[in-house]
Length: 126
Image 1 (tube, rainbow, N blue to C red):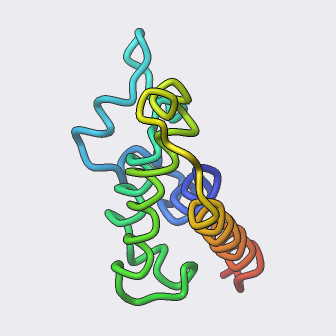
Image 2 (tube, rainbow, N blue to C red):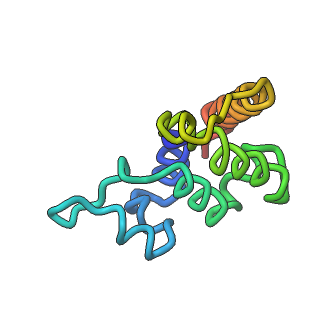
């Protein structure tokens, strides 16, 4: 998703910095020690917020005019299985077992993101 966001915002912003399309508090938080923007500091939740803050650019890529059908599974991943994949010690402590549902949801979102990327690459260019 990070590459898709970078590609879409980089091209549609007419050469301006993609950070200008981020909510200001997020843009300010994504700076390195020297004050330079560093997109690698974006969290999964940041990526979700960026997409929905720029929904007019992403809605066609995700095949939905409304945000809810896309937001709901992304939030489920972010608030569920992603936390335990990123922090296995939390999964251990809470005795969280990754379920078939978790794997299916991750696979669905991976395919969705890949499909959005393919739509972006193959779109008619002006």
